[in-house]
Image (cartoon, rainbow, N blue to C red; front, side):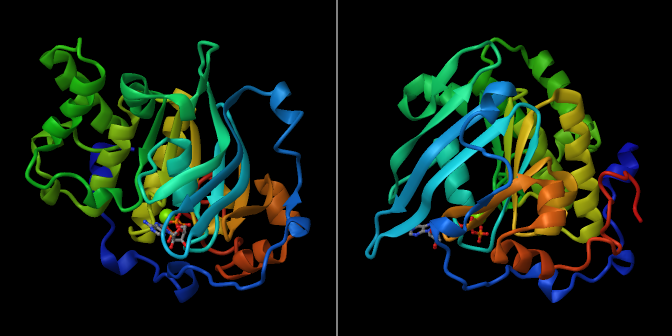
Length: 328
Ligand SMILES: Nc1ncnc2c1ncn2[C@@H]1O[C@H](COP(=O)(O)OP(=O)(O)OP(=O)(O)O)[C@@H](O)[C@H]1O
Ligand SMILES: [Mg+2]
């Protein structure tokens, strides 16, 4: 994709109108019990021994200590394999962001992880007990090993600071040995990687479109070549054409660098197109998980079926746009 193509926003008149179902989170009220939870392939044992795992989370429980207490994440097991895209789907408020923050040690009061373990399996062979990290070790872990594109991230760039400085800040904090020349080269390289003209280092965030700002946030998350990137609704606020461009870019970068992705969204059909495996969350629990193929062809849980049917057909214009690499 050329710079011009990548950075140009789609004109409004060619943008398909999102349907109500596409733009709104799905509300489904069926209560979930443990007995109902479906796992196509056992995530919590055995399987992880055979494949290269990057993060193992076990029995993660997170509460918001408010009155009354909100049990936002309840006994969640999650295994993330090296290089895979794991899709995390579920309606608004089901606990997706809270779980992601738990895995990345970003929780702040009143949030509290009341139980569970999170282990990061570093590529050099070390197992890191994420919950035991403190001080410099924690700071290094957060952006170096696992990075995050935050929900609504494109609005979180500092508006009065040029893109160059915001990228430099990542290097100054995490790669203090880098020279200014190296930082400049790397900042430009990162922008090119995400399809933004490298000269945009000279821009302020308000001079960039929403799609370009989101690409800059992805560049920042990519900056230190993390082993896992958590992307929390990275494209939800963007129009469908820009969304497709960015998702393709993420897929391409993943091919090049081999990082794993936890991709969070309530758009389950879109997740099925881009993910290797999908976990469906409801009311703080994972109610179904499996490969995208399994969930697509053989969803077991009523809630998963409802999420699937709440969006436009998979075989319609949205079908295979990412894996196929071309707009349909
Ligand atoms: N600071 C807070 N204090 C109290 N409750 C909170 C707080 N933040 C989140 N919650 C509650 O925790 C639950 C999970 O919220 P979370 O933001 O993780 O959901 P989500 O699945 O990411 O939703 P969305 O799709 O809307 O982003 C919700 O019930 C929410 O209201
Ligand atoms: Mg969220």
